[in-house]
Length: 210
Image 1 (tube, one colour):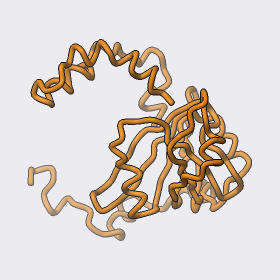
Image 2: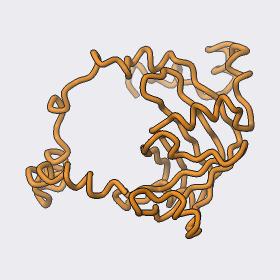
Image 3: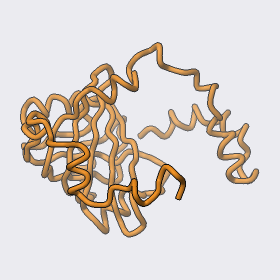
Image 4: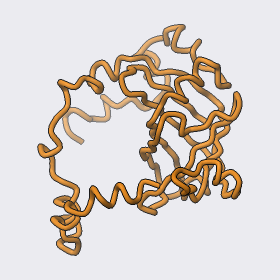
């Protein structure tokens, strides 16, 4: 261990953690409920993006999901449905859910600093009628996640305010970072041509959205 992470400085029990941070403010507890309140429903239905976290025998996974606002369907006070749109077929999240149904969702809305957090359990459905109900441009998802909500609450704005996530002045040019082709070309040790990958990527994304 380094000087900054010696055993004497590690928090290894809940009592030490509680003593370090103190008592939760009442508002942080009052906002957590076990059903989708109408106010919370409005946040979910306005969100075009959600981060999806799962756990399984191979470890943890956290992956992005996005589509038009309302793409996560609120069925009732305890149920959400999330179509699994086309991706890279790694299936990290789905493999985890087959083994362990626990799931966590974090919804983001452009321009809104609060986020919405959902913890629950999910199953993977391939019901034909359900898949068809989520079709876009005549293309249905291969599966739909049916999430039973166990806990739901909003997260205060501090993290997004600190990060200036929605501030246009904080945006950087994509060219300031390595391109996807540059990265995959090097990581594959030349097996994938990075320049070709970059050139074909915009068209491939548009062709494979649904």
